[in-house]
Length: 242
Ligand SMILES: Nc1nc2c(ncn2[C@@H]2O[C@H](COP(=O)(O)OP(=O)(O)OP(=O)(O)O)[C@@H](O)[C@H]2O)c(=O)[nH]1
Ligand SMILES: C=C(OP(=O)(O)O)C(=O)O
Image (cartoon, rainbow, N blue to C red; front, side):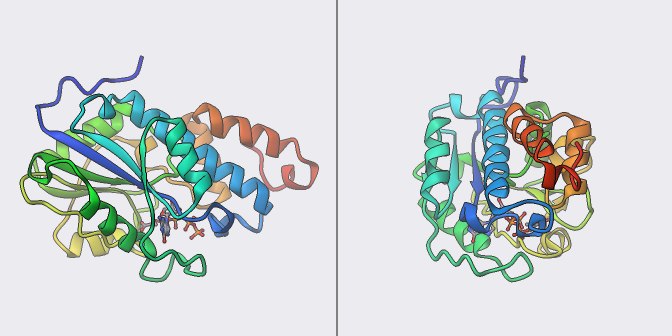
């Protein structure tokens, strides 16, 4: 049984999950995985992340919600399959890399501006889509901690990236600074780094070692199924053993 959202105060929350075009996603895994396998993996991690979010009860409140921000119709279809909203990128550019000032930030800002819920009563979360070991309770704990602070982040397992960015309280906005060294840049812009034992929330996936670490924590079913298949593929099984 997943943790539920009922113990939280009556403030609404909207979670934004951004995913770029699947065919160009997770380029840092290109040495180990074929393009088709990377596409399947990114889609599976999104399935598991959304399953956990929906299981956390976030979308049960009519003024709260989950929105997937993406230029990719296949990703939008995954959002629909989970009963959550999707929002288009304002300016998709598949050639951008993770080291550049990211289209991700522009996409999040556009989606935030497009939310129809009452912004004064809605806390915002930008959550990474590649969290296949996320547990609902971790996110709910982190949200509760963020509500005591205002604008806050959960630093990723590597200590440099941002697994989740929160803007809580009246008039708060995300002001996202995703991209390389985003944790330091979010903190420099005033976000508080939250302390907490949230290994699944911190375990975003950029490399094969990250996948192995996520597998040790316990993967969601969609990601586990894709990795089982990949590990059985002779050419790829050599470089990946969950
Ligand atoms: N909507 C949208 N999402 C983006 C964009 N850029 C990155 N993202 C998403 O933001 C999240 C964090 O990005 P990364 O972890 O660097 O993932 P990635 O860009 O697929 O990985 P690399 O290609 O290895 O850099 C992933 O879910 C990406 O799909 C963008 O321009 N638009
Ligand atoms: C996208 C980010 O992280 P990573 O590149 O580690 O996935 C980020 O922290 O902005």
